[in-house]
Structures are given as structure tokens and as C-alpha cells.
Image (cartoon, rainbow, N blue to C red; front, side, top):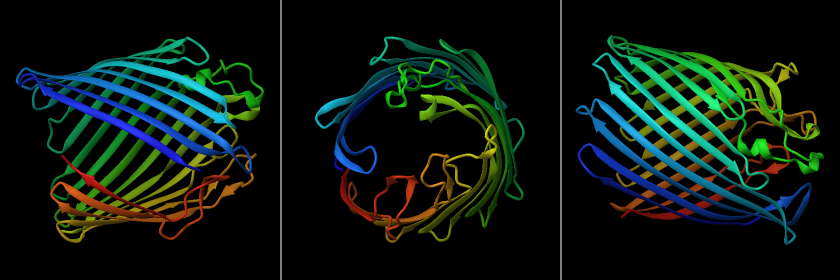
Length: 400
């Protein structure tokens, strides 16, 4: 299965005065990808995806830099087409327009106030001319008046054209003991996520559906975490551990028996993440993290599908010389339970090892190479969807 991809992007910035600067960025990509037919078949299936995005942003500093303002306008559009044996079998077009403002005002050395507005309009041009509008107001107050202590409290109000309005809040805090290098962290927050424009307009033809699911509800999240960090050896080593707890109501998933996208579950995920970062020498740096997750579907009273209990990542970065750098990384993903219709009830865990090296020929010219999946591990993220075997890449990079 082949891939062809062209990408064009650019960025222009200008400082119109000491206090006002603007930037404009744009990107266009044209992609053509071959893919396999449904089932164990290698048919003539091709996907075409064209994407365009543009962003204009202005930054205004006032009151001797104590009041910063950012204004943004963003536009993006996407056009997807699937061709099956020379005939178009699928088409989807959509666009997104977003306006937002963020202001940050430093009251004094103890308090900082931030707030803003956002308006987003998304649209699907394939099946309907309907637009989906979301207007939001948000703000946060931060306190740093006591050495080592940082407290923040924030709120957000979302008004969705289809799903009404909802308020969510967040509290965070941390305290660092300067004498011991110990830092305590605690966070609590709520979340609100409306169904995407694709989920709201998708018609699952092979499921037997003739219209989108109009009964979708927004996902509602609530969670907290408590953690500790410890610096050692003159801050050359950092150790950390965090307990997290997240509950999600009205989780959106895909169910072909129910006609496509539906609210499938009420879930709860809790667990512990530990990490370590260390400057072994001036040229060798090691980082590692391990996460244990107990994720449950509270409606079905069974483990949450496609959520491994164990995850591990680790990396060793080595500056062999001033011009040569290398990285060896390891990723382990534990076994994942699958849904009742999967041919594999429990997907095996896997471990992948990657290596990368780069050499600076000149100050602004470098060559690089990498080998992914060095051990040639056979693994899958989803049953029936293969992943690459050992793969080799080489390239050259020039800065102007």
C-alpha cells in the first residue's frame, strides 16, 4: 500500500511596534493513500485527503507589559474522497472557523488574572448545510504570594447551539519545599465535550442507518490527581509519582449494531504514574515513565476496551560529540481487552525499540538516520490492523 503526500506551509511575522506584533501562518497538504478492502482482501482502494488551514494572530502588550493581549482568527477545511475500483465510494467535506481572545493581567507580584472569549463554527458540507456554533467565556485567577506556593482557580462557560450551555471549573495547587527539593501537586477539574461535526452528521450505511444519530449527548468529565516530585543530586535527578482518577459520562463510541456513533458507556479510570529523569553525565540523559491504569466500563461492569493496564516508555539520549547525537527509545504497551465481537478477546502486549542518530555536517546542515522497531516485533494496536516491521529511514536537513 503506497502513500504520496505533498505539504506546503509558511509563516510571516512582523513587529509593527515595540508593543504590537502580528503573525500569519498557513498550511496546505495533498495526500493520496492506498488501503486494503474490508476483510482479508487487497482491493483497489484509494483515499484522497486535501487539507488547508490559515491562522492570523496579533499580540498587544499594554501597561508596561503587565497586560498582554492575544487576538486570533483561524480557518481550516478538509476534503476527503475514497475511490473503490475507480468509483467514488465516500466523500466528506467540512470547515472550521474560530475567533478567540486571551488577556493576561498581572495585578501585582501576588496575583495574575487571565480571561478570554472564543467562538467556533464548524460545518459539514457533504450531507447538510447546518452549522454548529460554540461560544465560550473563560477566566482564571492565580496566586503566587507565598514562596513555593502556586494556587489557581478557573471557570469556563460554554454555549453550544445544539446542546445548550454548561459551566465547568478547575482548581490547581502546588507547593515546593525549598530545603528538600520536594514538590506536592494537587489538581481537580471538570470537562465538557460536544460531539464532533463528523459524529453529528455521519450516516453508517453498512450499519443499516439512513440518517445520523440525533440522540447523541455531550461527554461530561470530572477528575482529580495528587502527586509528588523530588529533585536529587543538585537537581540532576527528578523522581515523580501521581495518582489520578477520571470519570467520564456519556462516552461516545462506535457501535455498528446500534447504527454508528452512540453514547456507549460511563467509564472510570484510576491509576498511578511514576517517572524518572536523570542527567547521568553532561552528555547522557535518561527519561522513563510507567503508568498503571484500572479502567472500567461502569455500565457493562467490565474492563474498558482498548485500555492497557500497563504502559512504559523510556529513552536514552547521548551526545557522542558536539556534532553527533543519538537516541534509543523503548515503548511497552500491555495487553488490551477488546469488545465482544473482536476475533481476539485480549490483544497481546508488545514492546518496540527504536534508534535515531543525527550528525551536524555544518552549523545549518545535518544528516540523520533512524531504525524503527529494531527487534522486528510483530504487534497490533487494533485486531486485524497490522503495523510495520523493522523500518529504515535516512534524510538530510538544511536550515536557512
